[in-house]
Length: 434
Image 1 (spheres, rainbow, N blue to C red):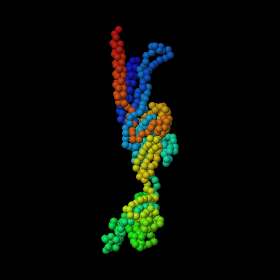
Image 2: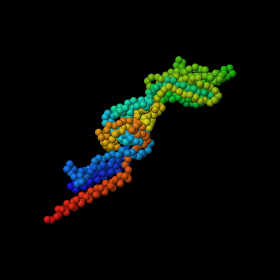
Image 3: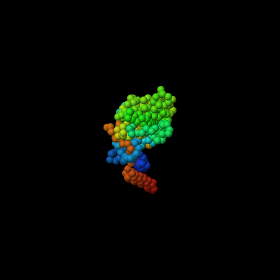
Image 4: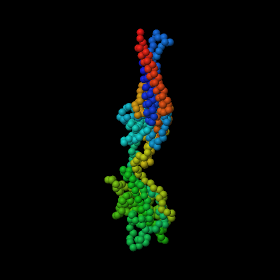
């Protein structure tokens, strides 16, 4: 009988060493939770057994219990690296069409080719859906969505109105009066800076949200004289290589004429000027723009300056970055200035986390022993806080595991010695001669 008692001790010690070896092998695995081997003694008894004369029958592995204590943290520069300080698990799903949900403490997430946020095995991170203000609109595991980063944001809008408020220097000369034009007629040429005084650029957008540059060239036409204190300017406007026509009723492509009184106040035009249509690259329909210099455009002695520039077009925003706050709200920022909430990180907790079934890759599944997952949000009652830019390391303590390994080895050797002693006693009995 002692053979089997010692054998159970050997098997138990071997299981203990295997558990410790598994812990040590995963000391560098993010989100890994160490396990400990729990033993129980084996006693065979009946009602008639004398409790003072009972001999045990060895030991048995009662359970291999997971220890969900907090691991250390590794800092990261990625906003998608997440760590939970306290209780809780991230919820992930292998595929958006499957119902099986897994749970993990490994928050090292990346973005796959379809822009889903996934762990290293391709499981998609689940979040609560939110509205435009970031408020959760649905809860429960069935309402959870796989977090996906959008590529664009917003609806494109073609520019219809451009507003410019500027000052044209009263000290500017008339290009046609310069010496270089004494023998030749004046002709505006946007490639020749000598034929205009100043220029201003405005970014506008076509119907597809593509950015275009509208350039206005300012040419002083007349200066105040003794008999006429007013002055005027010509404004030649271009979108790309296309010159905009300010007067479609007159032959040729006409510029805008700005008129100022003796005080430098703009007197004409009194409102916006609508150009004839132009074709943006790839467009089939013409785009019409109205340019308005407003009432703040002046002609005084100070240098040329653009005081205000505005337009009513909009581009489609391209995805630039993502942030995850301590409240779990995932926000994406775009090139057009949009800041869009995408979801709220969902956390899960269990009544008995040690009852979770290990799936490998630092993931677990719920079982009858663990109970159903309780879902919540970061910082809520019973759930830990969320940290972006950090990853939880394994909770394995190498020193503790090595000490346990030595103890398991000693236990193995002691049981082996007991087995050897029982063998020697049996051999001695076999050698007795009558």
